[in-house]
Length: 268
Picture (cartoon, helix red, strand yellow):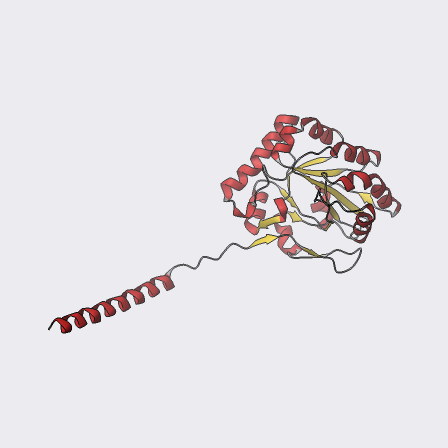
């Protein structure tokens, strides 16, 4: 009798478990499907020298969000941009070279850079350069919700206004080139143009700076009409070669454009 009751309990438990599993599966199937947010790490494939590279996200996706990685490819105009998370003494000579060649640039800065280097930031503005928003402390913005994303940009814009007395220009570059389509939309909603890049080379490792010849070669190979160059103002090599590189671009017939013209140039 004891064995029969025990078997009966086992059977009941098994049936109950089966029913519960079936109910759970039905409930799961009825749940609304939530798609994971696609994040991107900006990437380029340089297929041919002196031609626009192949991006991992097209103009057709980027431009409606007021996001750009190049200008008008039919004109011999290039756009010089610098990213900076800190200052190590090279920005002043970089500004000297830009001034010598009357070349406008854009400096994408984080909040602490602006707060800690007010005179350099004021000089950038006074000499006609654009200071863009590179977030406050360079986080992975794909991991931020809307409020945190907005706060990153607002804090940097506040730091800029505190230093210069002016509103920060509405240009944004995602830290490390990481973003989602939501990020592009949020930046656009706040009035920002997202500026990516079409040309760059490995210049950011302070412990392994490229030789001058390597830098000249890479920059030459990746120069084309409408190119947006990403350089780092922390690079010793960039500080040393910029004057000569600007001369080389000029001798090749290139002029230097402002990123404020990007939307107009691309959509002509």
